[in-house]
Length: 172
Image 1 (cartoon, one colour):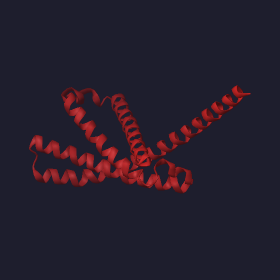
Image 2 (cartoon, rainbow, N blue to C red):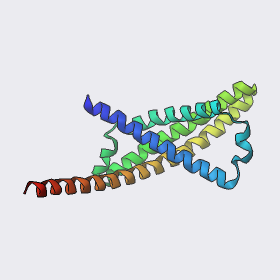
Image 3 (cartoon, rainbow, N blue to C red):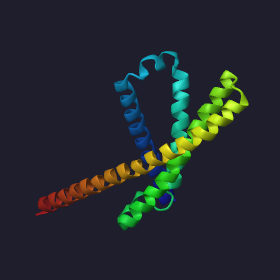
């Protein structure tokens, strides 16, 4: 039971971290290029929160699936564990990218009354492209997660060692 709860917490933390990093990188790149200048004027708070919540739910579900086979602890298996996580991250990212674009296109089509043929064309081409981009981002996110996991393991090891040696010195 505790192991299942730990797996849910790990998936929640990893998915939240990945989504925040992706959002910040995307927003900073869009801001630096000037792409946000006219785009955000007509985009309100409610649609922004809805889009972010939808993306977070997709990310949380896909991350939970990607980490279901042992989580980040699979990295202890060396390159084999890393490769397995990268492949699962690629697949999860592809699902997120495709589902996100499909959801946004469907909502946009319903709100704007787009014709069915246009929607099908956009969905066919766009979802395929979004899946590839999402897969690449998912694979890169796993590498970022693995690096953070490694650094955290080193820091915790040092804190544990310094805490243990400090307590031993106090006992003497």
